[in-house]
Amino acid sequence: DDGDNVLQTTETWIFEASGTAVAGTYTNTGYVDGYYGTTLVEDDDPSSYYGTELCTGCLKICKYEDKNGNGRKDSGESYLSGWTFNVTDSQGNSQLVTTGGSVGTFCGGCGGCDYCVTVCGLAPGVYTVTEISQAGWTCTTGNPRTVTVVCGKTTTVSFGNQRPSPGCLKIYKYNDKNGNGRKDWGEGYLSGWVFTVTDSQGNSWSGTTNWYGYVTISNLAPGVYTIKETLKTGWICTTGNPLNNVTVVSGKTTTVYFGNKHQGCKC
Image 1 (cartoon, rainbow, N blue to C red):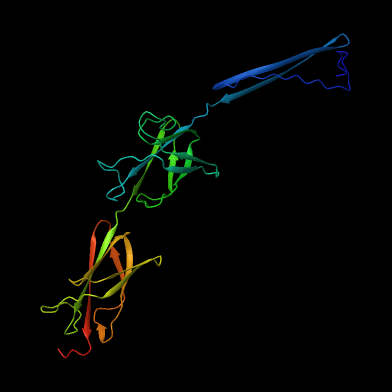
Image 2: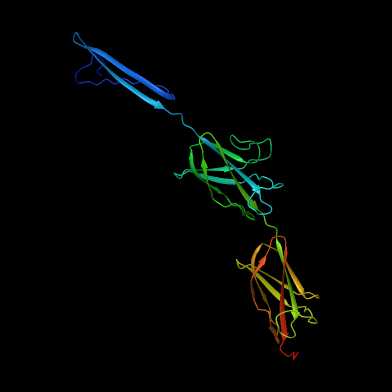
């Protein structure tokens, strides 16, 4: 346009209009007319579309203390705040969300104040929810989890975590006089024997049997351990040394027995 308000054969005039899309069927026709000399020139351009309102869903993530480790929330098992989750869609887009604080504070998106966190405005589809682990806790419900967000609805996914209490190892040492690998009547316990307990990461603890012939190694995380005795001159172990794959259970005491026979004994 050269500014003379006359459409020349070498010019192109562009007219634009904008509007807000609406749901349902919409039709519109654009009209244009002008004169070439004294001749009226007209044209029209019809258009239409069918608008569908974008529908989104919500994802509600809850974290609870699974005290008994059975993978479901039971009576007396509380929700936990301060746990962070990574929510990832099928295209790899992700966001971090954290479970809410105490009642009366922010509890997450369009959800209630129940220590969960709710993410809304999500396109329907499959999402991966991954919890960020915290030291001393074990996930009992699987991590990550795959969930489907549905249009116009809230999908809830719950993660349970157990905080195992420590266990103990109680190690007895006895005089296996007949060398049969078991403690029989008349075979007394032995004090002053050193044992070393090692976990799967190579951490170790040592202790010495007391006057009653046993030593207790406490505050051990649940798991599998190896127990090795320090042999004394003139003695042979009759029950295996070391003992491998000894399991410590949360909140309980695991008891093991080591038998030794003195090589000079002619029992």
